[in-house]
Image 1 (cartoon, rainbow, N blue to C red):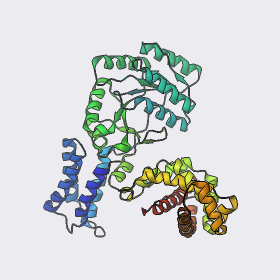
Image 2: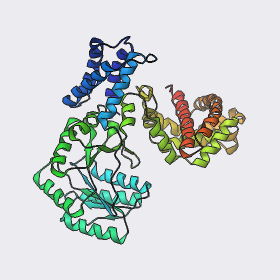
Image 3: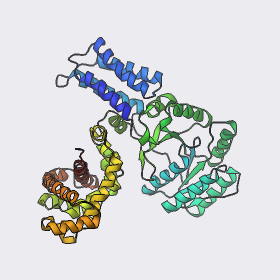
Image 4: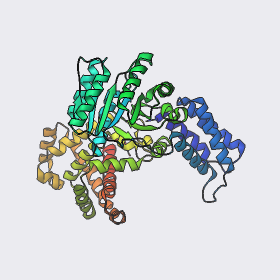
Length: 467
């Protein structure tokens, strides 16, 4: 995510960190590279210019704190301005009425239908009862896709094949929402290859009928400045309430995310980070800024763990680590829990400096190696998993044959596991911190994240990539 922008900014920061004093000349020279990084990221040139001017004004005008180097203080100014540029703070969905209506609008191929399912899942987690409505009467596959998503989510849907009047579909949806006592109705509307009058008029009529609390524009973040232009035109026609940026995981530049708020005045509310329904996040400007600057996003990682981790299991694992009793059974559990958090790349990228960890590493290949490790452990007997010291040559040959690997691969796994076991024993030192955190869900999830990170580190080391 935003790899090229992050890389360029990191290079610019190397020069900033070396500044011994702050002056007009050396700040201007250092910020020139930051400006070029923003322009190459397809950030609107007016936005980039205003950003640099604001940073320069605040950097020159600030008193340098004695305990902080001048360059580091400028980097802090850049971080603050980046947060401001992205929208300052998260703006949640406004769904106070019952039932509330959400219109999903956008062009063809932006990801409206998938995002409709993701929004429904997100609201379901919050205790809401969403109803999905297929309001795209022009693309038959859209109705089929939405119906399939609803079945996967075990949510009701309104699909009226053959009906060409969007308003009739909306009226039926409102009836179904009342009958089934659904409190949020999500309309997946039609898109076009470009904005035209017929599209706008259809959406205006639909908006007038359902009086939506949210009109969310779904945009492909990889299109850069074009996404911002589309947002401007949709906003002029419909007065959108916010945006959803999709395919953020494949956007190396970040121009759309950085320009959206400044140009349109509308916040980014949600972002799609992958194809799966779980690959969806609430947009937090401060967390996104730290990711862009290569500082990671541990808060979001802990929140993901809080949803995926079994708290009782986390407590049991902490106790075992404290006693130094980490086994291959526990390691297998860690691998499987880490998979719940998403891809290895997404997990590692949320760590401070995570972008540098994954450079040049084929993490999709490494995830296949995870499955090979899982196969080796699953080929062991319960006793062998608990006491790997009983694995003699004959047992190792049997396990290797049963999991389809070489004995040398199994030996390497066991040697590395021995090193990891020692490392995990040290995790018991975090017990005092856990008490300070109150032992709540997020606290236990934080400990579990550290153990998952250790598992990821082990696996990367196993494949020749030290994390």
